[in-house]
Image 1 (cartoon, rainbow, N blue to C red):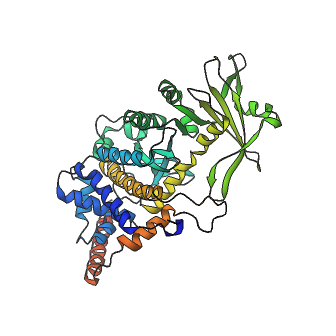
Image 2: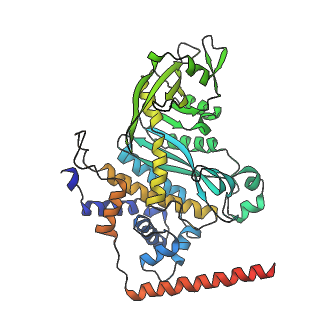
Image 3: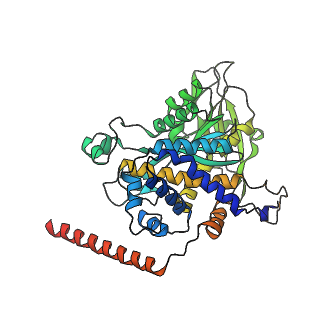
Length: 433
């Protein structure tokens, strides 16, 4: 079937139903099971803000209580659903040379009560903001990419050293402080224990600077390409001399810089100049410093690399380029399935919303992966279906709703009444001070 005519609504309906069936056993009662299905379809819908209020209105409910119970008090295990999502994705995308990508993203907040919130740097805003930070693990293969795990970062001083705040937010007693690399390590170990096929791990400087993560991967014989700062020192020559990586870059002869693309970008192949330097201190080791240079600006980036076996330069370049996949997943998750649209404050609610958003994103990923192979023509007349276009077509063919006027008016009254009640409570609190 031609790329431009590969839309099969009946098949897409099967995938939607399979997603709900995959996790159905995790819900003890029928009501939250059905609500979870409505919640996921709402996340995939064209509803502008994916909050409990808007998803309940779309589902035809008279109020948001069922959606709120699903995230707060209903009996179901978000980690078990996460495992089901991961297994489903591995069935569809699994590859022995897949890359696990660790990275964090911020969720901007206004108050001080949301679990894990504090003023901290987040790449989402590009500055220090009041926010929560989630650490995620992505799975990247030639067939597609998806999120397979998540952890909420709890700051040490403002949260982990405050048992009162932890208890109020519903944080389990066994959860303590863990750095972002430690959270990434937990997710990687869990993925390997679950039999996730992979050959590599990559991440930015936050993760490349952690010796514990690197040691864990070497012990498990998982290769890595981890970014480090320009002031990192590595061993060369006799193994006892430590030299800054930016000084090493200055010593690379012009002839040793090789052009390679680290993957397609929005404006074409991401082509850079690359050089690699062996940093192994024993004959049976495979360690390198990988250096990337922007062909236009000359900007440099550095990566510590290790592999249980010898590999060519283009393999390390491919793994390094995989890191952008998780940034694109964050954009897709927030823009397409409401990953950051939640209005919950507690530990349970955060993990449940994010997990269901990961399930919605997995649906789009699998639908994209099942499309026919792209046109090999370097200048095709039509591109393959993107995740955003698939979601658009899903809404046109399967998810569109036309609620009766009475239902729309009911929700208008309900919203305005609730907002008036909240306003009165806010004024009363201010007057009481």
